[in-house]
Amino acid sequence: MSDLGPPASALDTDPDYRAAVIDLFGVLAYGELTAFERLAADAAMAPSIDDKAALAGMATAEYRHFVVLRDRLRELGVDPQEAMAPFRRALDDFHEHTAPSDWLEGLVKAYVGDGIGIDFYREISNYVDEHSRAIVVSVCDDMGQSEFIVERVRSAINEDPRAGGRLALWGRRLVGEALSQAQRVAADRDALSTLLVGGVDRPGTDLAEIGRMLARLTDNHARRMAALGLAA
Image (tube, rainbow, N blue to C red; front, side):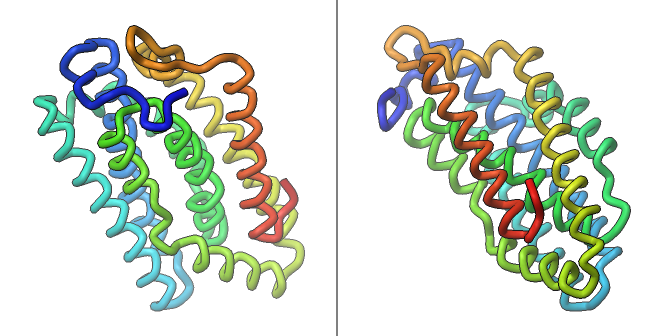
């Protein structure tokens, strides 16, 4: 695999690659838009003004990421709404199936549920051109929410150790739902799979590397759960 992926010119010369990059930006854009909506709604459950402000800041960052992706799709001559539309059902279903019942579940979802998606998109970005990769990495930046969420969840568990078991089960459910929806998207969108398979003048990957990628995703998930004080 090339460290830089295919050249940016592949967007003009390789229709399959162009379709895959548009799909990648489309699913990311809709993911950021729904994350903004979700975090803004979760702020209503925040126990303090400081917590509301922290979630509002996270929501604002998600919307900024959405704008970056929307504008890049327009630069590529694509209607952002059309690029996002194929992913609406899967992402909406994920959020419907994982609606948090309280403040702590919302925090765990933002940290664990979103985290595995971010890790996956970072992995996929290794197979796109350097400019596209820079955009993906920039919108997957943490924006500081990790420290805030870890502190709040650990503090809650220290105050009520029973919360740890409930939140651990919730974290496992989130990952299961996230993987299920990811498989659904991959099955519906052949273009995205071409990023891994490769093509003419584009490096792909093999089963061994896919196995290592899945191991990295699993390890990162376990580390996030441990950071929260939860059993993976």
